[in-house]
Image (cartoon, rainbow, N blue to C red; front, side, top):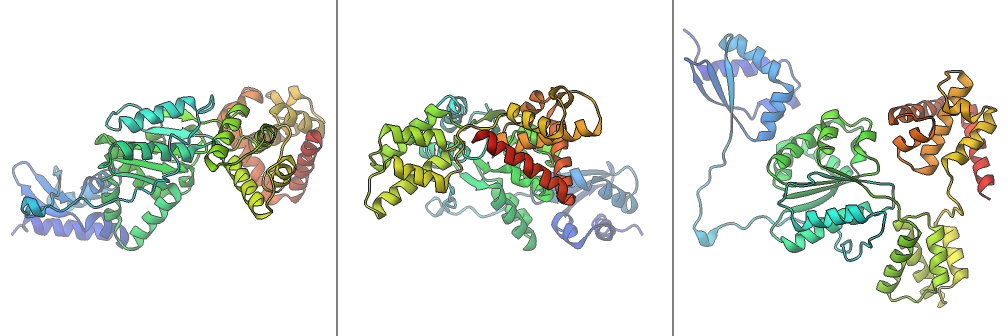
Length: 445
């Protein structure tokens, strides 16, 4: 006598449990519920708890499922999924439960009012404001903002969230760092509650994730965020991402996730120029009610390396010193504070500076380094120049490649990896690079 369809499904589950880990089985297969089986069409219907489980099964276990069903139901079987609907008795209108309050985790001080506009941030700021005021539009979704440390990325993405929250208080808006997202996901897995974690993030109307470069080695986190991203994107929800580099330079990130990052707007946030630094300083000084002479402001702007974070830190330190020692904020105090809190560079290194010093150190010409020769001494000088340019200029890899012989970003990344590998194993090579970097300081002195 042929076993009933639900018994055969249990047999299929038993076969599957032998091929996967207990953790994988409990997470992806145990929640599946036998729904129905049509003998005429050979169609098996299964109930899944949510769309994420369906997408994960289809993306990772479809072959295993098919093989198990062939053994228990026979060949030619078709599989159909149905997402479970939560059934609950609707209470009277007066007793309707209120939607759970969500702490947005936004910094209330980081708003568009305090985000000073300049040439380096004009476009990202304008688009960010447009997104905040029209969150239901699908334009510029996702928004991927990148730039070096201290250029104002975190301030801008918080400003977008705060403005949207101000205009649309019922929207579920959440700011989170990539590192905290990973920790939450790890805890959910340890507690065997990954579906609860995923279900929560699928309720967000505007998800803002900072420092996504932190996920480069977090494969499982990438996989989970991919499915959350798809759900939010399909449902017209807003996704805003920030990183210290553009998607093309996120080596280690899965290709399918990079494709998602690049399907909307990619906006570069550059370090503020001298004028913007002065404007930012004037804004902070005015807000804090301080009295600082223009020549001191000019000195701070020129020596704080174009970092908004450094500018804020210097003013906070100056304020503290003036209160504790009951003194005016003058040039002498500014020089003292800057010397202790900021690495002062009178003139930033350029790629030309680096090439010049590297060529002299290795006794090769600029033509040799920029050329295509594979001679060992030329390759070493070329890779060292690229590595040091990446380290000291903070320029995008694509730009460095163009300046050093018209190479692409992948060559730059490969060169940096080669140098880093040698630094780990060759002490003499490390001493050699230290000698070159000492020459940088002499050149700038």
